[in-house]
Length: 476
Ligand SMILES: *Cc1c(COP(=O)(O)O)cnc(C)c1O
Image (cartoon, rainbow, N blue to C red; front, side, top):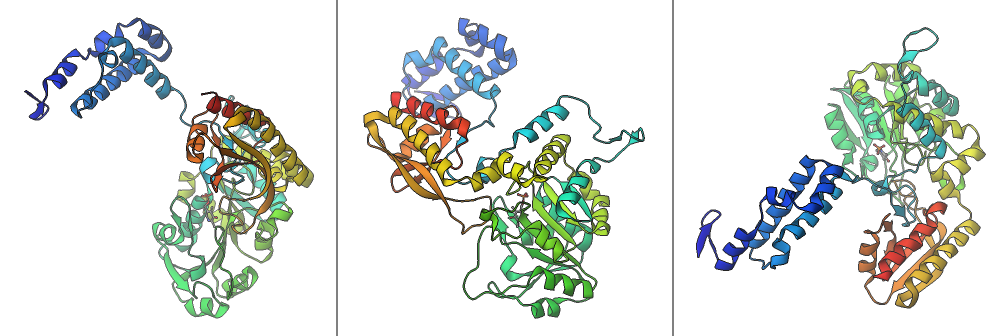
């Protein structure tokens, strides 16, 4: 017995294994690493080799019996090359969303229109007039590039774009209600995934939350009774990711706007998703126009939910209010970059022609896709996947329901078509896990021991890649 590592007892076998581990320098001399150093740089390869050796040392100390081959220079060099390759490759990468959830927050929410992508590329690889007024030949404002089109589309007096809708809500609270009170219905104290909670956002803006009404019923009189000298704002929050059904009551935006203005308060509406298009799937979602028409002063919504653009928070409303928000120091910390501005402008430009918006903006296209197209695409999936699966499972064409996602229209189910796979030689969980490892990964949804691939969210140009992924899994 020998003592090592803080006096732990080592067996003779462990001591032998530790002694036989090569040094980092020895591994770096292996032929296999020369090419890797050339490709990834000496620093990364050295770190990778050190990491592999340390990992083996930990394994040995943990009592694992490792054969001589794994402790050899060749094997360690191979593992170091693989580790270096992994570290330098992007962790963020494309995948195929076959879940049927159109605005899937975990999977990147919106797929940009080609027009938006081109607009990003143009300003990304060149200098631009981001903050330069070409007419006057002097400093301009980045906000000006986007205001006009938002105003044109929504009919609002003014507009402002920040990094996301959470930032937009925070900025509104900080601008109009810092150190003062904001009245919100108890039925609207929502949490959106990723820790956006109305009470927490409120606290970080230093505004004080005053809850009124109950979870299922809030009346105008409840708001009236809560207004006092310290009140600065009435806040309406769209309960975007859940619905209170049954014995319910809430106050319409126009009634609340009237009350707020009588009492000299700012009325703000956090809409969540920004609906600007008129499509059937959005029937129950409040639109930006409805809020403005109701007389709300400040309306906020996301750029990458039902709008189908880049991550952004759009604020529209009265000129006087939006100007105050723009001038708040926090606005500088939330400002969007040129790529977001370019993508949002190009997305919004498509909305100027409603037919173009439905066809060209992937989110809107997926939500409004006709059943014939969905059935045909699911059929193509069934053919390709069926060949790959062969005798190792059943593959069927079926009808199913897909969801909007992204905290929008929680109750809505859209009729869709799926390719349903029931593997016989592995569990459905294992199949799902293996499909997460293909390139690109394929994410389906599991339902009753079957993996469903929903045609609604599989992009037409990805159908073949789904079949290839199944070939990779079932060839093994
Ligand atoms: C999604 C959502 C937010 C947060 O918007 P992000 O753009 O994700 O920051 C805020 N409020 C409501 C009601 C939402 O649905």
